[in-house]
Image 1 (cartoon, helix red, strand yellow):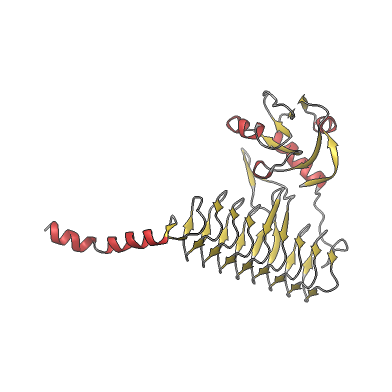
Image 2 (spheres, one colour; image 1 turned 45 degrees about the vertical axis):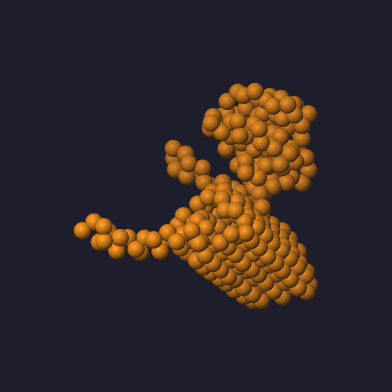
Length: 310
C-alpha cells in the first residue's frame, strides 16, 4: 500500500511513540507485510527469529520491539507493540468506510462498461473500457479492473484477507489495506472469491480465465494467460507464472512459486514450488509420468507378494 504523500520517519516515531534508531531523514512512501516490501516501505517484526529477515529485506523502516543494529540506509522504530502500530497506520491511511449506496460515488466506471442489476461497487473502485459486470457481483473498495474484463454473476472481488495475528486473547484481524488488480481481458467465473492483499496487491494477469467457484488468497499473483478450472484454491502470497493451467479442485499452499506453463492435473495438492513447463499430479503433486509409473507399480504389489512370499 502506497501513501498519498511521503511521511517523514521522525513524524512516524512521534505518532506511535517509538524510539527512532538510524537515519532520521528518511521518508516512508508505503507500508507492506514482509512478503511484499519495496524500498520506502514500512514493515514490522515482533518475533526475534524473524528480525534478520526483516532487517535485511527491501523495507526502509522497520517497526520492532527489541533493540537491534540498524542496517545502513534504514530506520528502526522501537515500540512495545509493533503489530498494533503497523495495523494502526494501515487503518489511518486506509480507513474503513461502509457503503451507503449500491455504487459508491467515488467509483470510476468507464461509460462503455456494462453494469447489470444488483451489482455492488465499493469506494475508489476503477473499472475500465468494455467491461461486463454481471448481476449480483460485489466489487470491494480500491479494486482496479482493466479493459474488456468479464465478471460473472455472484463473484466477490476484494474480500478481506484471511490474515490474523495470534494473541493470548485469540486471533486479531489485520486491516486489509491492499487491493485486487484485474488486468485486461481477465474473465472471472460465477461464484469466485478473490481476497484483497493485506497491504499489497492480489493480481490476476492479463488474459487469465477463472472458472466458477475459484478462490484466490490474499497477495497471490496469477500470471498472464493462465487457466484455472472449477473449485481451484490458491493460497495467500503464492505466485503463478504465465500460462499456468490448473485443472479442477487443485489446491496450492501459501508462499509458493509455480513456474511458467506448468500444468497441474485435477485434485492435486501442491505443497512446494513447481518448475515450469511440466505436468504434475497427485498429493503432494509430483511430475505426472513419475506418479503414474509409481501407481502402476503399486497395483502389481499383491501379485508380487503372492508369487515370492507364499
